Amino acid sequence: MTERIDIKQTGDPRREIAEQYLKEGRLQEAIGVYRELVNEYPDQDSYLLALAWACHDAGQIDAAVGCFDCLLEKELARNVFTGFAFDELVRIFKKGRQFDRLVALCEKAVARYPGDAGLLGELGQACLAAGDPGRAAGAYKRLIALDPDDPVFFCCLGDALLAARNPEGAEEAYRRAVELDADTAGGYYSKLAEGLLQVGAEERAEKVLRKCLECSPEESLYHLLLGDCLLRRKKLEEGEDQYEQAVKMNPASAGVYYNRLGNAFARARHHRRAAECFRKAIAADPSNTFYQVRLAEACAAARDSDPAKETAGRTDQPD
Image (cartoon, rainbow, N blue to C red; front, top):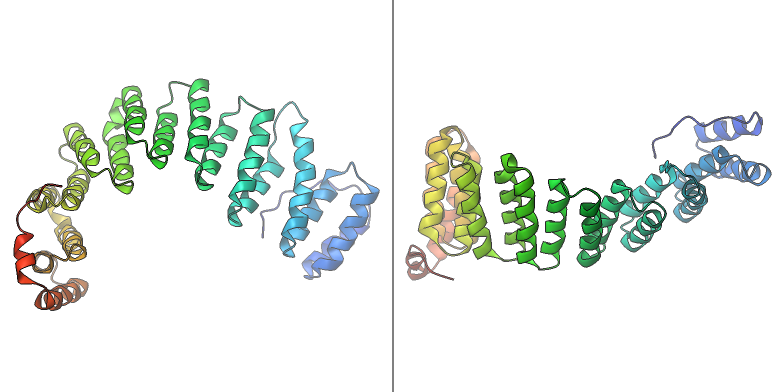
C-alpha cells in the first residue's frame, strides 16, 4: 500500500463514510463514494488524491494513474514543482516496469522545469531502464551543464556511455570525476572498471584497476578486482598473485578470498586449481563446512576433467 499523507478535509460527511469503507476493506464502495466527491468538488485535490490511492489499493492501476495524471497537470502549472503526483507515477511505472511511460513522464516534467537537477537525473535513470543509453547520456550532459563541478554527474554520464558501448567516452567522463574529486579516485576507478568488465572491455578494465592500486595500494578489494580481471584475461598466475596480495593485506579474510578465487577457477573449469584454493580456505577457516563442500565438488569435477587442459591452464595466455 502506498504511503499516505494527511489530506485536508472539506467537511462533507461522505468523506468519513469512504474512510470507514477503506478500513473495512470495502474498496469498491469507497471508490464509488470518492468518485461522487470528485465530481461534486472538482477543485478539491484531496478527494482526487484519495480516489487515486483507493484505486491503486484495489488493483485498478490505470484508474489510479489517470487520477495522478490529473494531479500532475496541476503540479506542472505551478511556479514551484511540488512533485507529489510525479513521485507516485514514477513509483507505479517502475514497479510495473513501464519504462517507456516513465521516460515520457520524466520528459514532460523536464520540459516544464528544465533547470531541475533531480528531474534530469530521474530522466537519465529512466532512459537507461528503457534501454536508451544515448538519451540517458543526453540528460546527464544537461545535468553537467547545470553543475559542471559535481563529479557524480560525470560518473552518471560515464555509466550511460558504457551502456552505449562507448568505453573511451566513459573513461573520459570518469577521468573528469577524478579531477574534481581526487580523494575518491580509487572508488571512481573501481566503479569504472566493473562497468568495463560488464561490457567485455577487459583490457581497459585491467589498466583502470592498476590505476586503482596506484591510488590505494593497500586496498585489498582492488587487488581482488584486478585478480578477477586477470583471470578473465586468462592471466591465471598474475590473477592468483593478486589474490595472494589481498590475503597478505587482510589475513582475517583469507578464507573468504580463497573461496572466491576457487569459485572463479571452478567457473573457468580449472578444477584442480580450484581445489587447491578451497584447501587454503579450509586451512584459514576450518569451521566453515561450506568450504568442505566446495572442495569435494572441485575434486569430483577434477576427476572428470581433461588433465591436459587443467595443466595448460597453469600458463598465462594472452588474449
